[in-house]
Image (tube, rainbow, N blue to C red; front, side):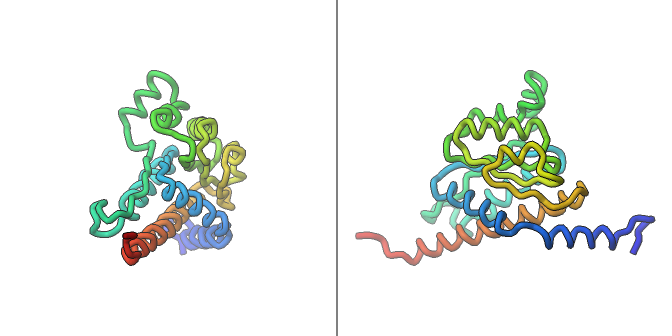
Length: 208
């Protein structure tokens, strides 16, 4: 099928092929890393540019709100996942870009909070975004774990990740499609783990 001359069916077939080739074992490992950070009361930082910035905000929203224990208002004894999207403060981003450099907009925000054991999650389809690379470099120096999702051949970002996923595609839009699927997969996995933990705590008798 073509819409306005665009091969709609061909594009979707390409997306399906990319999704079928995603390395699911690497997705599970990233979920393991974030869940361990949650158990250790550490913070997850997420960042990217353009569509990846929107996805960073989207994933932070899902993880921060969607993993809560329903109806608990934080009072159930089961803590919430600490997650910050570094793409959400336009004043902070423009301040660092104007007064320092656009390469610093994520790293400089992380300086205020990053600690050893935290997790830095970079999103870059090309894997070569300078501000994403600089933030990952800072995170590694601080003793944080670095994870991320990228595309093409992984770019320079690959060397900075403790664990990453390279979407097997050279099509920017299909890479971003896959990134959204990966983000939702990570969210759903963590929500299930955290809710299972809440259920376990609910049914575990208190120690006298």
